[in-house]
Amino acid sequence: MEAIVTKSDSDFVDGLKAGVSIAVGYMPVALTFGLLARTTGLTLYEAVLMSILVFAGAAQYITLSLIAIGTGAFEIIFTIFIVNIRHLLMSASINEKVEADTPWKKAVYAFGITDETFTVSATKKGALTTGYMFGLCLISYSSWVIFTGGGYIAGATLPEVIQQGMSVALYAMFVGLLIPSAKKSRKVLFLAGLAAIFNSILTLAQFPTGWAIVIATLLSSIIVEWFIGRGTNE
Amino acid sequence: MSNSMIWLIVGLAVVTYIPRMIPLVFFNSDKIPPVIQNVLKNVPFAILGALIFPGILTINDDMMFGVIGAVAAIVAAYLGANLIVVVMFAVAVLSTYAYFI
Image (cartoon, rainbow over all chains, first blue to last red):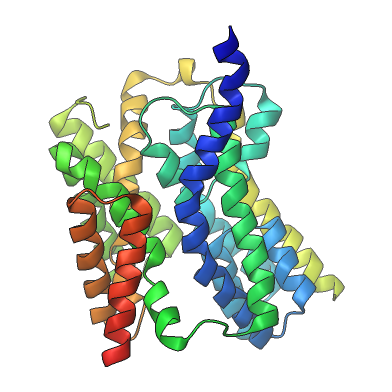
C-alpha cells in the first residue's frame, strides 16, 4: 500500500524530468515570441498574458503575423481554430493512454497539451498517470511563460549564432522521440514517413497548416492500419 | 492594455483550449470501436512525421540549416543518445555551422 501513497509523487517528478527537454526547446521559441510581440506593438503584459492563457507556439506566432498585417479579430480567431484542429486528434489519442480520473483533473492538464507535451507523453512506454501529465505540462508551461516575458524585456540575450542554432531545438526533439521507436518498428517508420510525404504534398498545395497536419496524420494512420494491421508500435 | 487586445487573447484561449479538452473529458474509451482505437494509437508516430517534415526545412532562409540540424539529430538519436543530448548536439552543430558561414 505504501507504493500507492508515494506513487503520484514520483510520477509527478518523472513528468517534470521528461519535460526538461521541452522546457529547453521552448526557451528560444518563447524568447523570440517575446521579441516579436514587442516589434508587433503588443505591451509586455499583453505578450505574457497571451502565453499564460493560450500556451500554443504556432498559434501565437501566426497571431502576431496576422495582427501585423491588420487582420480583424474574428478572422484571427477562426484561423487559429483551424490551426488548432490537430489538437483534437492528439487529445483523443492521449485519452486512449491516460489513467481514468475525475473529469476536472483531465480538464486541467488538457490545457497543457501541445505538439511537444503530446509527442513526449504519447511515445512514453506504458500508461500515463495524472501526476506525470501534471509534471510534464507544468515545467513546459513555466518555461513558455517565463521566457516570453524574458524575451520581451531582455531582447536578444543570446548571441546571434546560438539563436540560429537553437531554431532547430524543437525539431531535434521530435527526431529524438521518433528514431528510437523507428529503429524497433518498421510500422513506426511507415507511419512517420507516409505522414511526412502527405504533409509535404498538402503544404505544397497550400492547405492551411492545421488541416494539412490533421489530414496527413489521419491518412497515414488509417492506411498503415489497413495494410499492416494491429502490430505493436511501442 | 487595450480592451480589444484582451478580447482577442480570450478568444484565442477559448479556441485553443476546446480542441485540447473535449476528447479527454468527454470521450469514453470503452465506447470507441477497436478499429478507431488502433488508428488513434498510430497517431503519435504519424504526427511526428508531419510535424518534422517539411517544417524543418523552413527554420532558416538557408535550407541547409534544416538538413544539417536533422542529420545531427538523427545521428545522435540513432546512436542511442538521451533526448536532451540529441537536442543539445543538434543545436551545437548548427551553431557551429552558423558561425562559419
